[in-house]
Length: 285
View 1 (cartoon, rainbow, N blue to C red):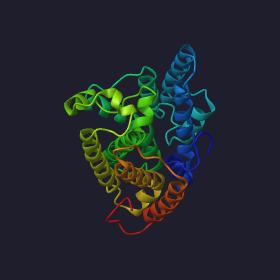
View 2 (view 1 turned 90 degrees about the vertical axis):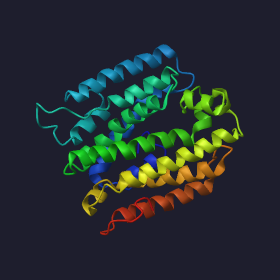
View 3 (view 1 turned 30 degrees about the horizontal axis):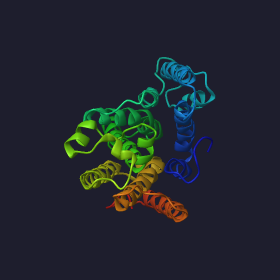
View 4 (view 1 turned 180 degrees about the vertical axis):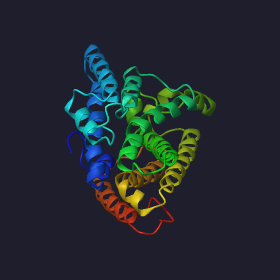
């Protein structure tokens, strides 16, 4: 799929989706890639801001039911209410907001700041995909699923690449928590990490894996699990990445060739489990 690296959780999410969800994820994740292109190291800052401004305006046009970019037009064409002139289009503004946050090198002062960042991403990606691919899912359930699974996916992505992000000047932990642990922000860019930080990371990984499991368990019918199979595959892979990252502490997890093979097998198993007529006792396995 254009713009998404093969072998990544996003790629497997698309690969194991049905035609409906594939048609949504392809442009949606492509839009994310286009927006995040403004974060490329070495890109002139003024150019990055021009790109970000354009995409902020395009997100507004998309929300109003109009679009200029081929990817936003493709996403709008998949939106179930696209034919209704009075209906709003999908809201991807959260992708612009989180990218603008990263472009500014902003930090999370508190856990609430980090949660809002993850919620914005979740609404722009997981809620948009859920609303269109499983349109008969009750609205409240769809919102709970998107918020729980989406926010956990976003934060786990950040925790798994914690050191890499820190070296780019992006701190993925709240400053008040680091201060309470007695850990300097610059310590995130180096390893091995202090014991207090590792203990907190272990705890947060466990909390986020539990949130993923609880969110996936909201899909109680085979039809809804099938409709959102790609998202369940995505969750299964991030759950496994979380365990690998936690096991690697006090150093960051570094992927190997065999990790790619294991991910491919994990994705296949998760896709088969999502298609089971029985409600899984362990949604991520």
